Length: 578
Image 1: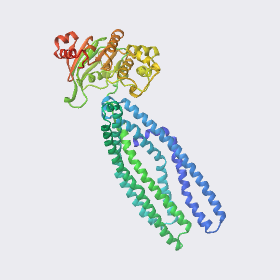
Image 2: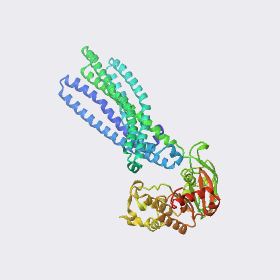
Image 3: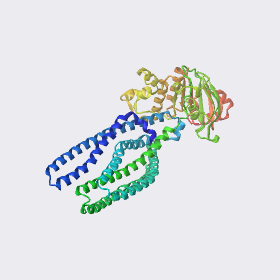
């Protein structure tokens, strides 16, 4: 938790004022028992009504000043803690944006969501308590102890027994609760992950009538979370009754022994009342510390999880002397490239891939599911780095190029069309926020999306739900294609991005690409031979290897695997998938 203090430093002034106001409140609280003692001994016992009025008015003034201190502490501690939480969330979000896909494979979205929301909230609450209760309780304990000792030393024997018992109890409370709260946050990750998975696939769940099955799956992780949370709460629940028991026993002991001292003339009634008040303040503060320690346990677990994200080092970073690409011709070279998502050679998704695409050429990529097509094109914009080999653009290794410069020259249309909540125009402009309305329309027209957008009630200003929930699969794909075309990139990558589009529309998109983007190097992953038949080169992927590379005519003549794909699709009317 100490590492996160930097997020509190910019708000040092409210972080300083909050404890100072709390010191004021504590000082006022410590004065109250002394004033009460004066009323009892000098006012009531002596029959002095004037003393009662004067002291009572002073007690009221002290109480008002204490309220001002408490309110001031609450205001400034809230300012400091809320801004701390805001900055921490923003830093975590920025950190996540800097991570590579391989990092995100290790830190899936469900756990990241929990860390950015729930864990930060725990730390935010901890900071507010740090500036309030962490000041109030220790000061009240020390102040009340000093004041109680100044009244009567003989009663100290009761405190000498009660305080060590309380500390032993608090020690075991923290020791057992800390590991449990770490487990609580992990179980919450699983709940969020299952919920996110279900919401993303809710249409599939309903289509296959699997609501009961999904309810049982969610119920299982929810019960696990509830069970560990209940165990944690049971330990926390021991805090209040045990501490209250010790407090009440201590007060009874003070009354019994103090009464005996009063009868012997060693302790005045007012002093006994004041002493009881100080003992109550001190032990109540220790009770509050018990609650604080449970929050520390939760905050410690959350801080460890947050720091784990900050400690994650991006696998893909800009090299020290990164080159900026002012212009790209579009030549693409793969030289003995191998890649795997795991760490073992038998887990390689790509093995020894070598090919060249000249500027302005189109490379069609065919292959069965799992053959490595998406893995291959993901290496070009450095979404992943290869295990071996070199990838070059215009002769320059991509690992030597500035990431922003590299990715700014590449238009990527992923297999799944990811859209964002907002207008259709905003989604098309995602790669070029400053593009004009005419440019947006031309890109949409090139992607064969203009017609259906114009039919929508608000046209390009029509709002899209999260992930494009209110659009069909083909509409989402065409908007994603328009988003890439608007960038006018030197290299265009289509990762099976017309799979939900009908054959006629797909043919129109191919015609537009050939006519308007003839100077752009294009890589087209497809399942249909007809989608890549006119490409300058066709590469057939098989189990992570380039099984064959050539033109349609060359592969038809020389590649048995390509001829087999063609025959299988011809037998299905030309529409079968690889």
